[in-house]
Image (tube, rainbow, N blue to C red; front, side, top):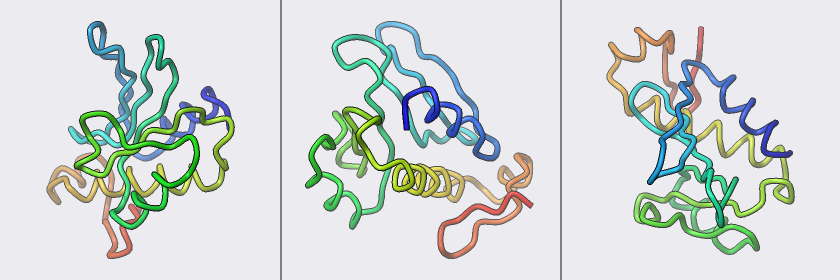
Length: 130
């Protein structure tokens, strides 16, 4: 999966908003409601590094993989950074991003989820967009 495909995938998730934070941040952020679930760094030397939130178990697993490291300033919240998305397994990356999106949506109030068309968050963390 390349950066363009991953950006398109993030945009297709239910109720996702994409916004660019200008300098000094230089981050392309994906959020649901007011909760971020992923972002790309857009400036050098870290251009197109991709960060997202993960579970505690996956955090340990992922940070042991080559090319994945704890996200700067956000590691304590279990965010990781993938240095090069092109070498990361695409199906696994999509699964991880879906989880991050569902986790962010689950943190919204029931009313806000309804406003965004996110009918229910089931126990497994998946968001139903029905």
